[in-house]
Image (cartoon, rainbow, N blue to C red; front, top):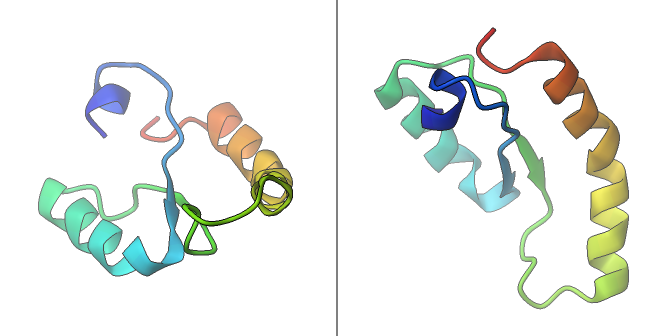
Length: 72
């Protein structure tokens, strides 16, 4: 959010177990509509093939958020 406020385009990606935390944080920061993407948790023990699959699923959504702009 801080980078976006400074005009630096970003896309936030979290794992699904952190969705409640992200929702609470965006609320506290005053950006309840701040978009973020999530993928399946965990990633620390995922194989490179599994990580690549997740990245391929997220890539079109990342592109859309960059094209749309997060706070703009």
